[in-house]
Length: 328
Ligand SMILES: [Fe+2]
Image 1 (tube, rainbow, N blue to C red):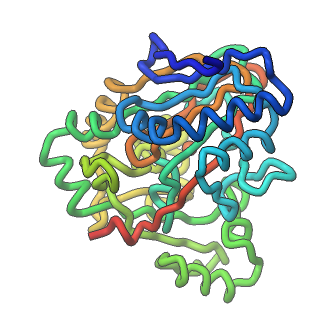
Image 2 (spheres, rainbow, N blue to C red):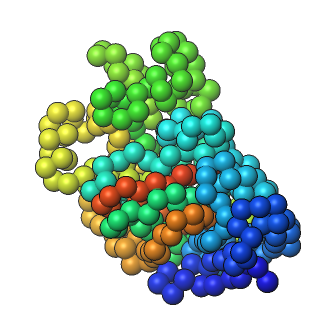
């Protein structure tokens, strides 16, 4: 057999390793195609039982081949995402989040604060960082079960209100986000995409939206902690940054913030419980060049550890689903 399965000892992640010498030719493509046809159902089922899946040693060394592989698995890459830079020449492949190397990207379910999000997410490692740079993964069913029932109820019943105030010099501009420099057109797109919005006196745009704090998984019917609360909550800024940003902008005008859906503040002690649950169940594996990581975005959250040296990971978001189908 040219493709064998394995379990990564450190993380419990299931992997599939390509073991043939046919790395870069039609024969390799045939081997992969036949394997995918025979194993696609198993891959989907494995996603519900393992924190993630890795495809290792496959002869996939470019963003285009990465996208071809995802399509071969019969997933649909999303190509209209405006919150990440695209890989050049690729229709559905994005660069990973540009964020200072020395800072962690905290746990989040991809696009859980947006009008639609990917059911599945893929990462392709083109360059392994010299030090650090893991993609920590956490099973959000375990996170939900770890949290006190009262806190889960708050996330489920109140939901979450994400508030974003576009500051050109700090984040993606509203022009890039809505792909227009015309204010009327941007307003129209806010309405179409279900955002509440207001233009501030200084010309900045502020948008807000209610999104779930938990969901029921559409296939397994399990309850899952599903959101971007850790990524958007001010308690996760370092003290100096939090103080200076609150002083500069005020809590109502922070570039990104999150509240309970009724507008009440999510207190730091609630967020500490969330952090403890994420940290308790987080798993990590060591990236190898050309690894492809596959996640069910509605079962697992991911982040990024700080790193040194160059690191290059591409991203594909696949099979988009609409938020409104998950808001009761
Ligand atoms: Fe992400």
